Amino acid sequence: MLALKIDKSEIKSFMNVLLRQDAFSEFETRGVEISTFADFSINGAFDENYSSDERKEVHCLWKRLQPYVFNILKGAARPKLLKITFSLPASKLPVIHENAASCFINLVYQNGEAVCSTAVSQKSFSLDKSVDVAWDESVLAFFRKNKIPFIEEHI
Image (cartoon, rainbow, N blue to C red):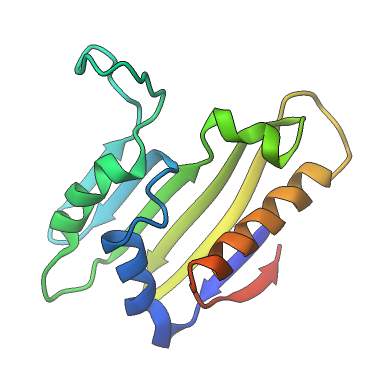
């Protein structure tokens, strides 16, 4: 498990990447919690009866939810809380590890600080941490590729 702390001086830049760019667009969104003048909660489960799209998603991709979250957050005041749980789509899990069942990035912004942590679940029980290591390395590469500055902390 890994925690990537976003330097306070870089939070505005990070939020720009998160809310305005497409870096996270292909991640599934498991859930979003926002606390501003009111509390907002988004369950990322895709309602298959809503759309006749040929592509059936289990969870909404971030690119579907990003404009809604942006509209809630835009304005002068910073949110009291922003929590987003992203997961890697199932089709991409074999690239990470053969035993990967789910790979997560958990973002928490609160009290002017932002931290992204990683987590995995495995298909079958194992004490082997190679799934965790592979996912952590992939997330580090993703942050570097998207020029998201961070301070790495191992949990």
